[in-house]
Image (cartoon, rainbow, N blue to C red; front, top):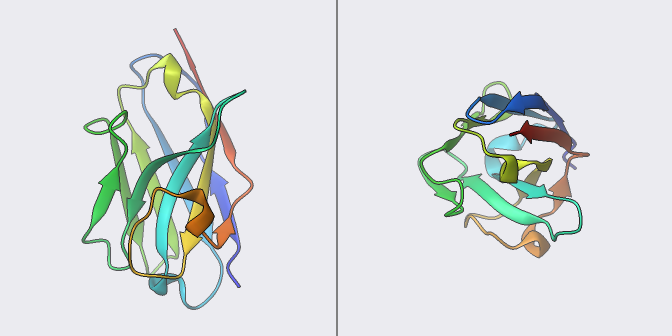
Length: 124
């Protein structure tokens, strides 16, 4: 069982930065592929970025590539999402998710655990 708690969301102006954090419970955190998803009002939840067990592989959605960076610290059971050059279209609730298998996936159905989400609002 893994519990995920996100933090770091807030209101920021376009062009600004935010860093999201996700704290995971459980002793086997390093065995989970971790990802960030987001969901804007009236839209489906979408993949943002994922990182492998050891942090050596990452995957990004085209919409955030070059602006967002995902990382993890297995010693602290933490996953981070550094978001730079934020745009109004990045406004959404951001969710941390964990899957207990090797491959990074953009499909929500393949994730076993989800956090409650943290709101990110980017004003123009």
